[in-house]
Image (cartoon, rainbow, N blue to C red; front, side, top):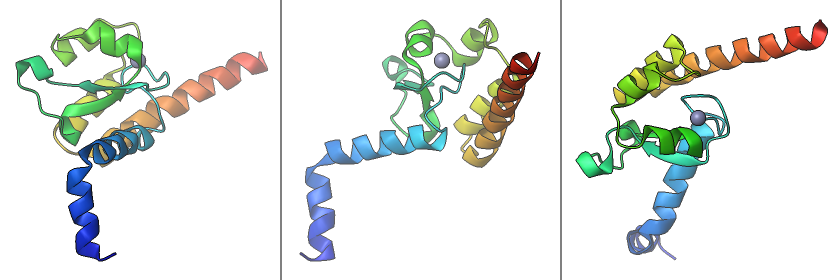
Length: 126
Ligand SMILES: [Zn+2]
């Protein structure tokens, strides 16, 4: 098979490509929800599809089902500010992600995650 045929095949199987792309987003955040840190089980459209939001990496964020369902069509920052899981670093991470700075987004998510792990260790130690 020639390389050109492979590209051709991919065009005929967009579903496979979409699945791979979704998976790559989950891999990026270590399968964790950007809002609360639970296991990410879905892809949330920052700007909802109902309002013309596109399925692009900067508009799609890994989220757990619970956050995804709760957020629904609300403005992400307006909604997230009122969540128990609210953390300014996560809010910054969302802004960074939306503006295409995935590296910064990832750093912020890891920062929060490390603190969460530390808290758990402390609790166990007591
Ligand atoms: Zn969540």
